[in-house]
Length: 426
Image (cartoon, rainbow, N blue to C red; front, side):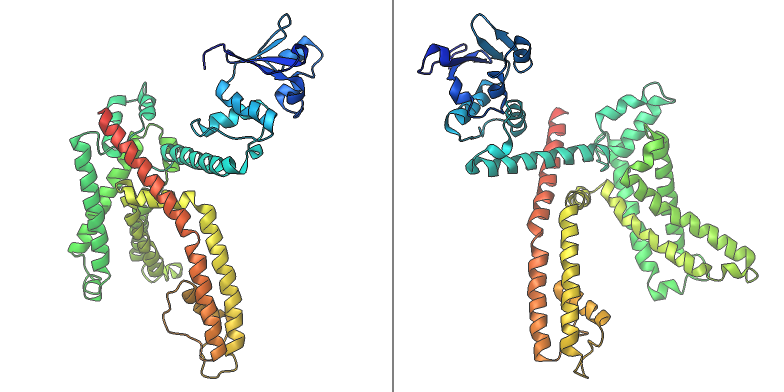
């Protein structure tokens, strides 16, 4: 179609409305446009003054009786077809957000689309919104490995800006230089070393042998904590905005993996200094053991260097409603089947399902299809209830799996494309 082409419609000249949409002229019968009087064009032809007309269109020529709109001619073809036929269809080649904004301008809603177009339009729009939310959350709070270029300008005019910028890029972006790759590899090795040392220290032959004196494992633990502490301090010093440093989840994990070590040292120092005189420190050993359990947070430090761990975290973040719905369904199923199994088994003296709280445990391991076999129904009615419980558990657990897997795949594909693009730019 050529620019400025006039699309004529048969009818009397005085009954035709002249519309100019992005340079393309349309002559449409007034009665056709009045079929939907609440739309923009329907309200326009009912206006009685030039001022009211100019509020609804971009320009107006009283001499030619022509209304001008600086809008997309492609979308208006769909709008004009809606006026003439009453059926509204979308264009697949256009951006869904652009199409949505255009039809909103003309006073037409998305729900006016025909069923053949509405399903794919809403699905595509939802996917684009999810991708946009994922990209914004990754750039602000998910702790991406690659340094966001927009953060580097924050170093300008600050103290030791060049040194801090180099430290920040070295610690945050393994692809920045060979030095940054070496730091990333060393950090991963220290994380695995600390995890292995923690696991070995839990073995009885090593735990009891090292309670009375310091061993190689204790020295290894000390070295790992010193490395984590130095790394954490350097990240704080090099951060472009240190006051917002702990707003990043990965930085909070770093602090949670280091803090228990120093709190444990403080408690142990108080315990040795006061001995048995201070009764408030009697349970100090238990407190120290609880703090040592927090060393398990070091496993989460791998999220800074592992794309898979970050993908798992982002998937759970984007699927909060689905995960919440799954927990709700499982909770309802546990309450329902635990009550049923209790009343079917309570008359059997040999059954271990003697109370509803015990039946909760049975319902949990049955609905999740774990089935430890420590408690199980003895009666025929109880086995029927158990069968229904297992079938319902399979259905409930499998329902959100497709949605979660789709989000996981989208995150992985998106980050793979971003990584390939960054490599191509370099």
